Amino acid sequence: MLSFLTTFIPRAVVQGIPLLFGCTGEIITEKSGNLNLGIPGVMYVGAICGVIGSFFYERSVPDPSMMSPVLAIMIPLLCCLLGSLLMGLLYSFLTVTLKANQNVVGLAMTTFGVGFGNFFGGSLIKLVDSDVPSIALTNTSAYFSRKLPFAEDLGWFGDLFLSYGFMTYLSVAIALLAAYVLRHTRVGLHLRAVGENPYTADAVGISVSRYKYAATCIGCMIAGLGGLYYVMDYATGVWSNNAFGDRGWLAIALVIFTVWRPVLGIFASFLFGGLYILYLYIPTGMDHMELRELYKMIPYIVTLVVLVITSIRNKKDDQPPESLGQSYFREER
Image 1 (spheres, rainbow, N blue to C red):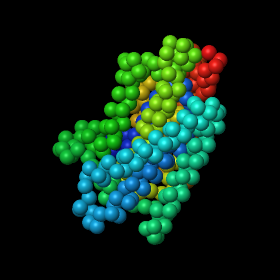
Image 2 (cartoon, rainbow, N blue to C red):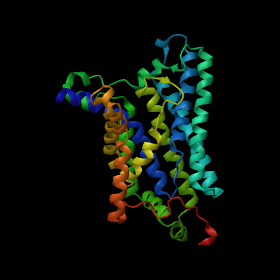
Image 3 (spheres, one colour):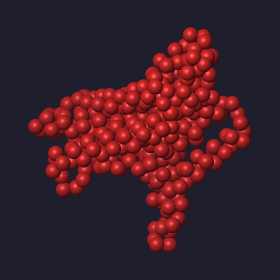
Image 4 (cartoon, one colour):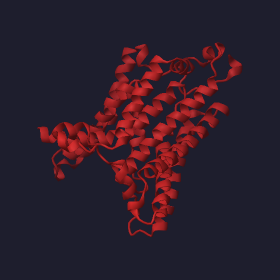
């Protein structure tokens, strides 16, 4: 049993980290009243921007041993954050400034982000003249996936809690920080006020547009880190077009599952990560192929069940912000 847990739980955690980044970012965005369905596209853009930065840095160094660990980490991180920030600014400009429909803009950004990533990813693949349709950034990935040096000396405890790259712990820290800011600071109070009733918030002097812009851009930057983690840690530095699957949509589903609470997002992400790979642990064989497909549906079924339960309970704390998905027209105040 212990050997199963030390194998299954780390794999579930690794699967759940991109979801945690995306979920935390979307929670912050939705707390401002913006419903960003473009998170899958944002994660894709964040990933490809990090890949581009890492790709050109690796090619500029004649010998992998001459790579600077600081630059190997900071270049893809900064490129990822910049690309994700631009996506957040684009969404905010369209929905906050131009008052465009948030659902339509989000879906369009998802399509745009995937196309953007595939275009530049395909271009990089042509540059390396690879026999397979992928790019391998293994030298950079080694810095992102490096474990704590003493993890192997601590047995099962090290395997379960210390055998991950630094972005795993960064994702948990960001979620905890987001929870604290939202619940225990004036900025968090103002942000929640904007999401619940922007007209009242505006009336007491809170800048609705500023908070919506800031929350959306910060949320996109956090979500973009999930895409970078997927490539540099989970996929060991290998970029392939259309390799993300439905992880961006699962991150959005997690927001509902966690009832807009970042701390719950930590445990829910790991749970969904386990559910996502659960089908790999059921018996194999032709007689079980249909059952495997049913297992893949479990995360979405669980989300639907939670949505039904929270709707029936109709508890104030379990409901989305009242102005979620609605444009704010100041002249109607």
